[in-house]
Length: 366
Image (cartoon, rainbow, N blue to C red; front, top):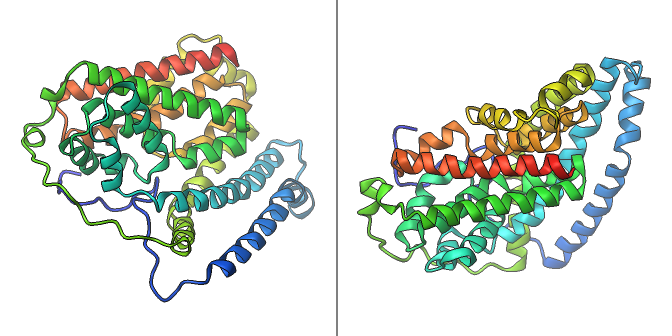
């Protein structure tokens, strides 16, 4: 982390860094790819529909556990949620991988350069959801965007949305809570990114960039983007599955295992008293607790699911999740390379306030 270079960082566990270019000589015809895709989706649906009966059968018949016991509940939770989440990730990551083949960092910069006010912040936040960047890529992306003429506030909207409202978070939330919670999370997450970026832009804090960043001159260009066929894009989707799911599956398993223990053994009354909606201090405490941690949606969402099942308020749990993903201490240490302490403190304060409001809002209406 201390050996900073202006080169793309190594891929991290949270997301794929860039669209994967298909290797020549390994392409199938578009017709065969479509046929395989239809067959794969049919197989996916058949497996997905049998997960719950299979988990109950394995727990009760194969392992001989009482489904109403603490251990039985924990094992059933793990055997059902693990393949469920992985199957959802495989499906969605493929389609997002195809979408990402249309974007490169250079293309994203061009779309955002010159955009101002709310329109630019909104576009930046939406691109943050759709493009393959995470908090680990913060420094080179920040420098590239600012020196390309992207306003500071617009850049912050992108950097807040990219790790917080990504496809892994949305897939896990949809799979564990349903589409309403996933949609609310996406809407409020984008709202935090847009408003926080807009506020930071209005504060005119460019002078709190590190001196070497302000002295950078945009040299223009970047490698020209190669034209891809639909066959290339489908291959990119398959490559995204190998890349992203291949990185996050350990986090999924660890997260669901932790959630299974909570689901089976933590008393409901205890969790309701600590993270319930009646405890006004639970939301700020959850945000403060989340900042020192460093994980991604794949690791934290299954834990959140189990906490809510034991009586934790939805808003409190999601505030904790947002702070872990968007305000982690390691990300702040990375951003210190390009931001002065006052701008980092402003970033934490504005985003943290937005997360607090989201937590209280969820607790009030759900």
